[in-house]
Length: 203
Length: 214
Image (cartoon, rainbow over all chains, first blue to last red; front, top):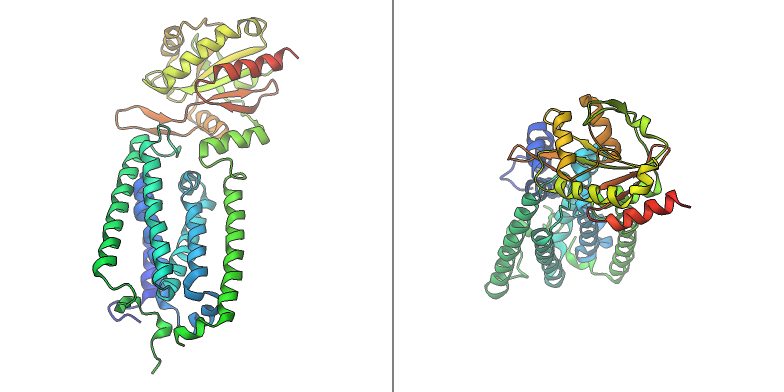
């Protein structure tokens, strides 16, 4: 357990409830960039936080099925792919069932597996995942920037292009950070925040 | 509980097994979410959906450019081309108006015989009284016969129409609107059966000619 927070589970619940509050939800869903770059990442962060609240013993039981975090990262990739479809973003602001699907699947099928799997992943697995993550920002950012047609019926074209520019900027930022880490950082050494609960010797 | 436990050969096998299962399930989910990898946007999904399942349209009360009142149900019996506009629109509606004018001319025969009608529906009824609608049709030299421009008489009617057709209208910062622009085909039974893109005049003409001259 991280001592800086009263409880990661509480933090997760608080985050999801705050994001469900109609004024905040409306505000974040009003623009494509806020939904994709703020709301969905915060929902994922809630799931990540929830993973920290899980007892080490329960997580250790999952580990044989999640060698080096591979299963979890595969799950994250396919669920994230679904939430990257312009159609899903559109529907997630208007259809109640899709709203519910987003608020459940992003924390539980993206954030939670990430919190569980990332600490298990080694250099190669992390590298593959991060490069694909960065590439996705470039691919989607470029698409949003140059597409002459609106990809979401709920969002204006200038909003889509702004999101494209933000995504390219984030992609560049991530790439610089990655390059910096590769050259000067130590990938294999786990920082204190990376330690998997199961790896901490139980007193 | 060390990392060594998870590195056992059994763990690797189980992980591959579960990962492949997750990938297959994810592929299935993606396929379902895109109508079999056909529709990645709401706009394409709308087209795929009406072609598979025609939509019964509500009998919404409308008022046309001459001030006459009628309902959508009154137009049954002929093939109907419908677009959604607001007359102050500087962009898509101008293109839609151009397409409608071309279609009215190219389909003059079936239009005169009453087999085909064209209807432009305004989603901004407060700013589009009959006089504005008439000016809109005149701007494209529409002939006023086969091409009607109309506004819904109630807000409720407007909402029923946009919901049935799948039109999303969002206000922009300049007092206008951003909206999905398309040309909708309604069959003589009053069902939305197809949706075309802007500029697909040739395809629309061929489709209609095939239907009215079997």
